[in-house]
Every structure is written in structure tokens, then in C-alpha cells.
Amino acid sequence: VALFAVLFVYILAAAWAFTQVFSGRAAFLHTGAMIATWMTASVAMVIIPNQRKTVNELLAGREPDPALGKQAKQRSLHNNYLTLPVIFLMLANHYPLSWQSRYSVAIVGLVLVAGAVIRHFFN
Image 1 (cartoon, rainbow, N blue to C red):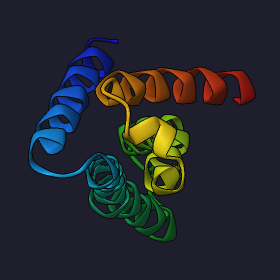
Image 2: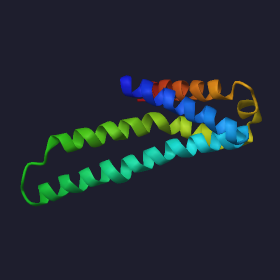
Image 3: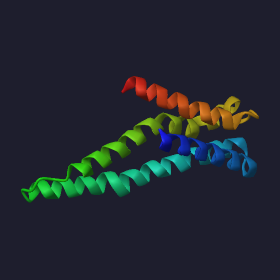
């Protein structure tokens, strides 16, 4: 929960900073791209390396470290909750009611919360 709160504030601050530099359309796109980059880094730097370590241990006939699987599962869960907000932010170019508003940063916050709630419901 603490990590979510810190990241939530960071994402909103980044979205606000993007709106100061770019148009609303570009601010939404950059915010979505920033989150998508984090998701990609989670896969490339944690999930896949941990999977390779686990498979190598199993092939060698040893018991794999359960912490590797737990860490990969945690990152996968984070990615799961960020998927819908990223999709919305990247496709928001087609919906000027979201990015053209003076409340665009608040809309980013609502999208993050709504996306997490929807994913939690589906999970």
C-alpha cells in the first residue's frame, strides 16, 4: 500500500510536469509510456531472470529458491494492475475530453484508481 501511494503521487507529479511541457495529448502519452517502461523493466529485469534461475535449478535437480518465484509474482501482479491505466493513457489521444480538460492530472489519478479497482474485481 505504501509503494502504491508513493508511485501514485510520483505518477501524478510526472503527469503534471508533462502537462507543463507538452500538450495534454502528449502528456497522457508520455505518462502512459513511462508506466509501460516500468512494466517492461519489471519483466526484463526481474520476472524473466528469476524464471531462468528457477528453471536452471530444476534442471540441475536442485530445489529452487521460493523467494525468486515470490518476487516475480509480485512484479507480475504490479504489472497486472497497471495494464488498464496504461492502455487508457496510450489510447487517450482519441478522447480529447480526457486530456483537454484543466483537470487532466486528476483524470490520470482517477484512471489509475479505476484501473486498479477493475483489475482487482476481475482477479
